[in-house]
Amino acid sequence: MEGVIDIIKAINGVAWGPYMLLLLAGTGLFLTIGLRFLPQRKLRYGFQMLWQGRSSKESGDISPFNALMTALSATIGTGNIAGVATAIFYGGPGAIFWMWLIAFIGMATKFSEATLAVHFREVDAKGHYVGGPMYYIRNGLGKNWKWLGVVFAVFGMLAGFGIGNSIQANSVADVMQSTFSIPPLVSGFTIAVLVGLVLLGGIKRIGEVAGKLVPTMAVLYVVGGLSILILNIGRIPEAFALILYHAFNPTAAAGGFLGATVWAAIQFGVARGIFSNEAGLGSAPIAHATAQTNSPIRQGTVAMLGTFLDTIVVCTITALVIVITGAWQSGENGASLSAYAFSQGLGTAGQYIVSLGVALFAFTTIIGWSFYSEKCAQFLFGAKSNLPFRFVWVLVIPLGTWPGLDLGSLWLVADTLNALMAIPNLIALLLLSPVVFKLAKKHFEERER
Image 1 (cartoon, rainbow, N blue to C red):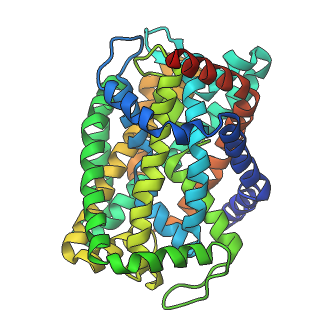
Image 2: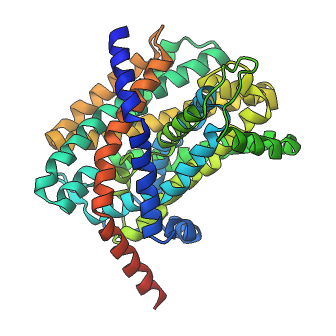
């Protein structure tokens, strides 16, 4: 087993090395400039489209609002709680700055992904809308590029079992055991049963569940975090100063914190940022392709809100709570670090908020990612693979809660698969960027007439 982990570490070192970070940041920056900062300038318009998209009679399977909630169900998850915590644990407070930066330019990436997903989507044999990187690669770049779509689908299918399945279940089991003394396997099997019941209803049931649970859990968690920040409002400037300083300077060991280099801050900040908001990964456009809309650009503006809400809002709250309370020096890691930070700020109530937040976040993430991975499998094997895939997906959930499972190794595998999944998608985004620029220009020119 150690030999396998060593191989994955070697792959991870290359996959998340300087070239990958340059590709991610370069793609986001190129799209941001090419769109003339449109995603950042059109935030208000995006919220307007989200509000109007609560119900729609245009072509698609679920409302634009539920499409975003499905995407957010997969992104607002343990990445916001455990992911932020592990970024700080390994990279120090400075890692948060790099999470912010990748999210800022990632808004253009997410906008472009969703725009292309709706523009090049298809209707499958069962009459459902399907789309995402594998489809805009094949339909946008031509059949000679189908192999690149296949590569994405393979890694997307496999990545789901890490980022969207076992890690989520592991994080739930961790906080449920530390907070309520519930055995990990009990949590694992309970989640598996509940997820199985939702998946029986397909994308419409997933959208309905996500549309109700995601706003509820996000408000609960955000209110709890903001309460701590308000109680410690005088420390907020110091926390921002600490984050900005250590983004460019090494973090010395202190308390239970082992210290971190600037490179570690960049690497873990970007990796966990991508894990959290998934901009560039190619996952979210799979959900947005099902939206009831006839306008790729309108859905693109709705999609970019996911990155803003996920990282700029929710991740920032988690990070500030961890830094302000001093919990980052405790030696705790993952969801336990966030739970410890919230308990320092709100006592037992804070720990309960994180525990329930992790449980709800992880549950909806497992549901959202089941759809992503299922559609990747459908692209490879056809619609007949949907039911068998759901069965396997549910069976794997308890494995993430197996006693003695190494959390560090799980994150390592997930990070590596994320990078391998992102590469074909980023290549496609760069090659198809003229399509995005043209559609965006036409849409807003017509709107201003």
